[in-house]
Length: 205
Ligand code: ADP
Ligand code: MG
Image (tube, protein in one colour):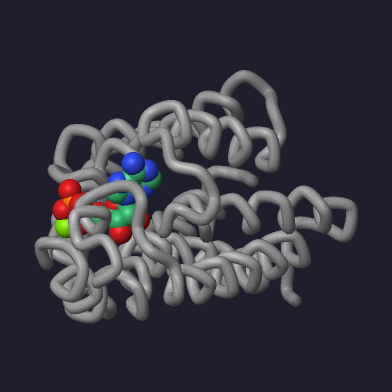
């Protein structure tokens, strides 16, 4: 990933979060406190401003800046978690690691921070299969890998519907969390869908 693609990805996420903020907030109203869309919109507006002010840099710098901005601007559980994903991804790229390695390191950070496993009805349920799909398709090129990751994230998000939440605010509802899509898993699917779209455009596929 080069700087232009990293900037295009984050711009696409920002646009998607603006468009879907109400839906994400409605999902969170059903099993949480109804602020997920608001939290992410506030965070990505701050990221957009921070990236506008960032001089020519690298993909690692762009994604690292995205992470530190989310960490400082987003309250709630999702700010530190997404902040960790992007900050770790940026750090891995700056150190010469691959995008797939960066995603894996980001997930490791999220699991360390939030202690959620697959099946706990959180964004980990979307991120984990997405990263496995990206790594599995990496040999077919960036666009194919990103598409595989986006599709797996969507399926992973959908898989949260019948689950009972075991982490985060939704876990306070116990059985009453069953039958609802997890808002964080839904936003992870949006983030990876944005990656697939911008990567396809950049590589002309
Ligand atoms: P809050 O729950 O503090 O209001 P948000 O509404 O912004 O924060 O984000 C809620 C989302 O965060 C959940 O839908 C879930 O996907 C994710 N989440 C919450 N706790 C955890 C955790 N411990 N590990 C991973 N993801 C979590
Ligand atoms: Mg919330």
